[in-house]
Amino acid sequence: MEVDRVKKKGGSKSKKKNKHKQKRSVANLLKQVEEKLDAFQYEEALGLCEEAIARDPSNVKALETAAPILLELGGEEKAYEYLRAAVQLCPDSGYSKYMYLGQMCSGDEAVAYITKGVELMTQRYAKGGEKAGEASSSSAVISEEVSAEKLSNGYCTLAEMFLTDCCFLPDAEQRCLECCTKAVSIAPQNPEAHQAMASYLLTKGDLEGAKESLVKCLELWLPHQGTPDAILPPYPARINCAKLLMELEEMEKASCILEHLLKEDDEGGREAETLFRKVECDDVGMLEHIQEVLKEVLLCSQGNEEGEEQEPAANGEASDQESPDMSSDEMELT
Image (tube, rainbow, N blue to C red; front, top):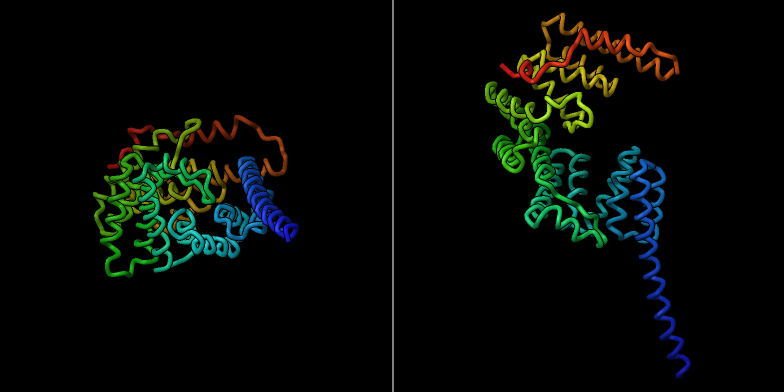
């Protein structure tokens, strides 16, 4: 009987040791995932995440890490499955899963997810934001830092929902204004907050108010456009800014932004041309100018893809002479 007790006791220790080893292995896998992501090796990172989830299906950090990688690689269905599992396992912490789900859904469901995400962001920010994120870095949940700008952008996302998918709600207008106001008050230096306010005011028909908000938005980033290492709003935000400018009949200012977007992404050039057509621009010369810039960018892109040698200074100098960057004074809205 004594021997049996010793065997049972030893077996219990062995199980605990194996369980500890398994958890340690998952932690090591997730550390490797971070290294792969830093090197932009998304497929390798996803493979490691999948292995971690296979070893520990209830590991929230693994689930929340794998989801955005899947979205980057086009695996929306699997990403949705992982995010939903993370919500069920850890509903009251980790805002990013709710923000992702909100963007993947529509209507009331999207608003519910984003609202929950913003609530969690607000709680984290109130506890110290970045310091609170560092404190949880050793847990099984992703460490999520919350800066004033990030929280402000969360309110911008929610405001956009009330302007689009949920504009039919009886209180959509009031809730949109509240979100825009909070976004601006939390981070006055966030250009996207002022742009969100401009969008709201434009839907209300307040053209002067919309212009004033766009002036504040542009003052925060436009003077730095084209300078090395400039911190600019995301590409889609600048496209939307150009669209707002065109709706306010500020074609030259919109053109200045769109030309820089052309240099960043050929697809952006096609969208820029589409935007001019959509708002029925009467300035034929301006439209022809945009089309000419688009043509130059696409020709350069094709030359690079085919490995052909280009004449370096010719295109660049011509472009600079035809479309010089506007100064900050010239960019003032009238």
